[in-house]
Image (cartoon, rainbow, N blue to C red; front, side, top):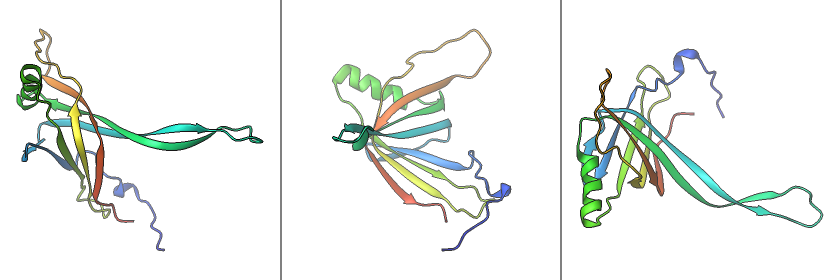
Length: 152
């Protein structure tokens, strides 16, 4: 196996990437996103055994959650909440994210989160202070794919 030396210029710029959501079969570019984070967590059960003082852990399931932070320039996500509030129709979607910094040789990494569902939304905002209208949308998801991997 070939080993590579890590060089500072090979660090991947977090701004270099793209993302979109697919809702109802239609793709929406997230060009107005300022930050996207997602985490996967393992749920573990205790494993105890006679003669062993430590308590082991066995992974039994996992869960995914994240936050999409955007400039509030779209009503798309509010509309999803209105549809649920007024008609009981909850909307699930997928989100595809690609990290790709053209100044590195690592290449792109593309992930897909499926079964995404928003938890809450700021439905209305006004503020007398200077600032930009932003929206932070926490979400959960229940499926993942790794379409492209960084080069080793």
